[in-house]
Length: 231
Image (cartoon, rainbow, N blue to C red; front, side, top):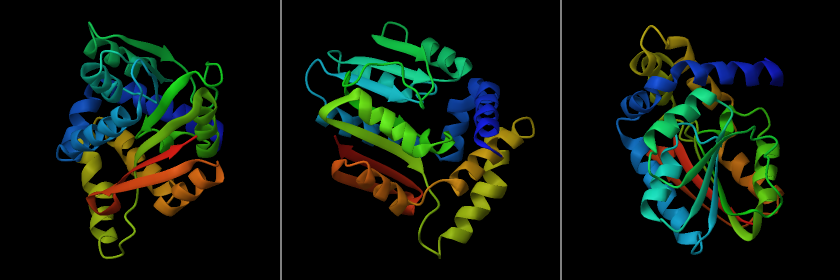
């Protein structure tokens, strides 16, 4: 599919699965996604100054923004996503928390240059139509010496693990996550990972975009990666 078709398809996927997205994520990751997100949040907190501003791109139902707000009341947090249904779920989960939720396209963020201390994207980059452009936008809106974080799913590099990975994520995960009703949507989550950059390619993209002090941490034998770079 071309970029326009992919964008519409991904939008429809998340509009459809919004009300069971969180529970399904826990099922298909056996609860591990909570730990991965917690690790990302802790890294962000280490690098965000007091009264800092954090942008959560492709925020989905808001787990990263909510966790940051709960742990650091001094932070100014903005979560953006192009799915109204996902944002509505985030709003429901974040009553009494100081978070701004905004509908926006990751390819054209509606913020001034150097507006945020940190920008982060979790399990969202692979669903966009232009990975480099999204990262460039994140870099643009972050201040000098600010950090760009990405947490996402990858096909493991280990050739011995790949067959088991494929068996689970292609054949079992869609039924486990979406059942018969949302089977097609969860097949897409597998396909988007298959089509995504390899771990080394994402690291190379961070380097190409002149990010400094690049660090990364692999989870679950490389099926998940947290990467950070400094502007």
